[in-house]
Image 1 (cartoon, rainbow, N blue to C red):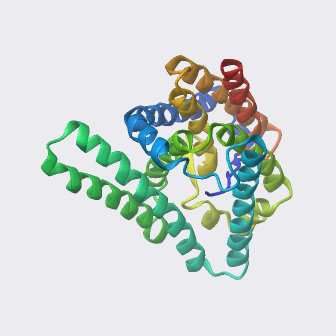
Image 2 (tube, rainbow, N blue to C red):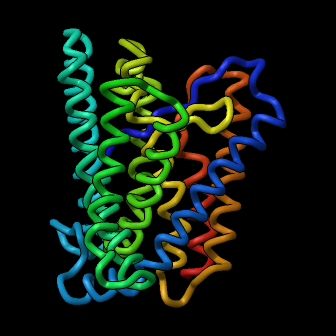
Image 3 (tube, one colour):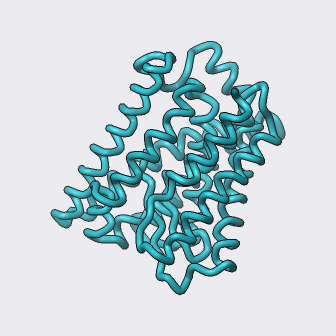
Amino acid sequence: MSDPTPEKLEKKRVTPENLLKAAGVVVIIQFAALLITSQNLHTYRVIVNETGPSYAPLGTSTPGSAGNAVLLVGFAFVLTLGLVWLLRRKMVMSFKVVIFGSTAFAAFVLTLVTSDIFAVNHLPPAFELPVAFGAASLVVVLIGYTIFVKDNVWISSAILAFVGAQVGSFFAETLPPTTALILPIAFSLYDIYAVFRGPLKALIGTNPNIALAGMSIKAGEFTLGLGDIVFYTMLPSLALFTPKLGIFPSIYTILAIDVGMVLTLFLLSKKRLLPGLPIPMFLGILVLGFYLL
């Protein structure tokens, strides 16, 4: 997974209108993730029941789940260090290849599954494979175009928003529940370190135009990291996927996360860079915890 990229903005752009536009973009992505989750829910429940969760190397107990989250944070840290190393040595093409490879692989696999389930449910059998492989291939082609050919911010934002929604939905449906709750907390703590002192600050500072390509989306006048989008969509999808919860807890979780996001963006009038996860994740987990306790 890519590290959450902090929002970056001049003070004059932090206006109520721009905050509302940013929130509107994120709400659309979050509801898209809920649609994906709703469509894939039965299939992923069957898969998890038959094969177990997608990621639980240290088990599903609370200590094991915490360890699982730490391992993922460690992987993100090492990956970011590698990307910083590439940029500092002006190995731009290698940097782009790493970004493309990691993003395109996840995008192809998840889009293939999502579009295949859609085709099975809504289209004649003859259309299943062409639609599934066609949609997955198109997403990969568009990612490659925006990274290697032309960084069209709107195409890039749309396709990465779709990918982020799918990853968030996938995590919500296939991670052990305890891991799914601990992971946003772990990445929020890492986000604080990465933005203010860690490798993410160095990555953005080395070559911001290259560093943000393939890793961020535009939400109005704001730039949000792909990792931010993954977690903004994961918690509402987790609420929808959890049997005893459902759509209303999902909506309340969306509201809580987006209030936290708007507050974070507002604080950009005083700071140039801020981590995008801590406040939204705290509020989102607070709402989920209320329903789960």
